[in-house]
Each structure stands twice: as structure tokens, then as C-alpha cells.
Image (cartoon, rainbow, N blue to C red; front, top):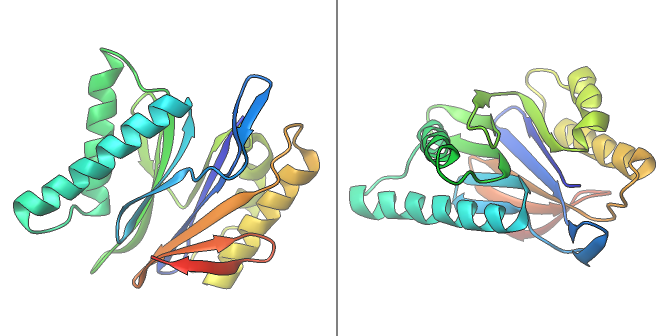
Length: 201
């Protein structure tokens, strides 16, 4: 019942997720942060089983930090994607994680990038993506509206169109969404409708 949306623009990547924490017919909370900060320039949006989301994303976060401590440099977004995919593939043959991910990051000399990763350990570099039931409603909007070289205002406008569509048409009520942007200056957290800067990270 979750929705995670990602979009790549000119020098930035946006990851957006609903804030409901629910299972079956019960909603536990409406302020869940489903977008984990892996380091100063990487975000990992998640959807799936709550325990698997927390266990796997924390595991990735700590290993990214460990790599930096051991080697004195950070993993690139592409290398982080390969690490995530490798570990999901290994777990798939033992005890699979029921988690779907959107990895957004910014690397000097490369720019922003967005990766779509599912629980079957398939991975693709994409311009936009969506996980969860919400994808039935928003992928057509992303496909129609996305163009290369989007500035930040245009990207946020597309994300807000996606949120408005979900809040209008989706059976499950999703009152709150969290939006995070990563670019050359790091990670910023925004609130939707209209996007307002909440805090710098």
C-alpha cells in the first residue's frame, strides 16, 4: 500500500515517498520517513515489508559508512547500486528481503543519477521510477511530463502532480508525502503542496 517516486533532473535527483506506516487494515503512524540518507550525497527510497525495509536499508547505510572509513573515500552511486543489487541477489537464494528501492545520488564529475531496484535484485538506471500501488496512477504522468534537462521547479511540479493524482484517485488515503532532493550541495528535505524547505542536511 506504499508509494515511492523518483525523478532525475538537471543536476539533481528527487525521491518522494508517502509517510503512512500500515499493515492490513491498521495504520500505525502517518509520519514515517521512508527515504534513508546513506551519506551526504545519496538517498535510498524504500517500499515493502516494514521490517525488511529497516533491516536492509540500515545494513546498506552502515556498509557504505564502513567502506568510507576503511578506504578513505565514498562509494559512487553506481558502486552503491552494484553493492545493493549483489546483496539482494545473495539474499534471494537464502531469505529474500521484500523491499523495493529507488537510489538517488550525486557524484562529482558524473552528476546526478537514479537507480530502480526491486526485491528480485533487478536494477536499472532510469530517468524516473515508481514502486508500489501508486505506480498504476503516476507512471503515465511521469512518462508524459518528464523531459531531459528539467530544472528543479519543473521536477517538483511533476512530483506534486503525481501526489495530487494519488490523493484524488487512490483508494488508500495518503495525506502526507516526504520529498528529498540530492544535488551538488547535498541533501535537502521538503514538504509537498507547495514544496517548502524543512531542513538542510
